[in-house]
Image (cartoon, rainbow, N blue to C red):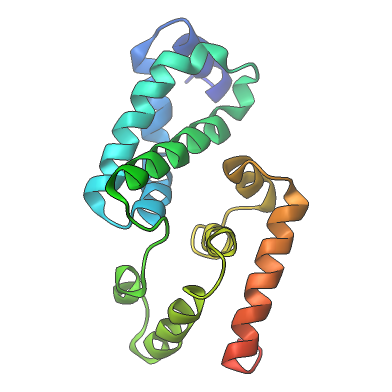
Length: 171
């Protein structure tokens, strides 16, 4: 079995199967990220399709094969943003998109948090959702948002602080 770096090298030489293997190995992760931004299945799938096309066209520009997935996620986020700009939707999703995944007793708290999230700056919402809903690390969030890691930490800290203030406790 080929390593990720070897698959990337093959893809850079035009091997479509290698690129497809790389994408399919992380398809669930890509889908969750796209859905987080797009808020619906159709837009998420459109963004993933566009990401594949862009990756095929631009993978030769990737200098460090080990950063393929970070590169792909950045492209995916940009495709989601383009789709949303075209359709004039909000970047971040609403409570209803996540309510079915939580226990009944925590839905009320979740609804409160999502309502409060709407009052945060979009940058804070984005960072918090990437961190806590997709379990991304600060570095990955920084690469996707194209900001320094310190900025990501600040956005998350300030956003969580505001949520705690409104909820009145340590949730």
